Image 1 (cartoon, rainbow, N blue to C red):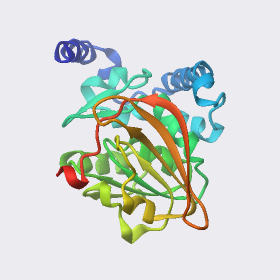
Image 2 (image 1 turned 135 degrees about the vertical axis):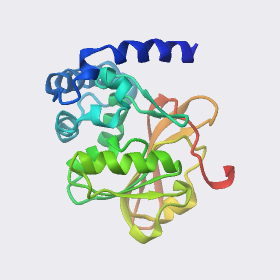
Image 3 (image 1 turned 90 degrees about the vertical axis):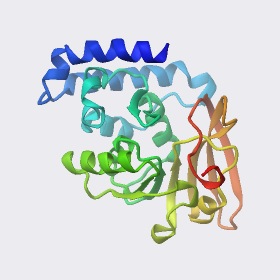
Length: 245
């Protein structure tokens, strides 16, 4: 079923003027996407407790060209509020989930952020646009290389990308103010907790690796104690790393 839907979408995209016009700015489409993100925040506030996404997150989404991080045949669908396939068994998260994760993380200018799952580089670009110092790691070498090119071409070459296993973090860049785990885990990997600064936040989908998870924020206090807050049921692919490889 997924393959037939994808094939149909691919056929439409390849014949779409939006796909053919690679120089198009898509500013109006980005604004519509942001309005939809705002609407979804209102619609889910009874579950998340969040009625308003951080304006800095929304401004970054208005600025970063999401279409530049989407495979060209699917570029016509770049600003729909849905996940998009990237190949290699990976997906680009929906804009609402990307926005919600950044809001929950409480990103501030100058924050040192470690991200697992660079995928195409879009969320790393949002973080950089918000003034964060970003280290992003991707286990799929082909995706990591594509992401690096995407980030350079869109003006976010300051993002430090690495090919490797995000389960173990990146000690050279620690401590981190924020860790974004963009794959499902049943427990937070110990190396990521260890590399988190006091007062730092981990945002991750925590729960079943084969079903639903809860988007969770873990905050580390000065005594290395951890506080957990749960926001929304989500479904992410499992973290490709640690004991699974």
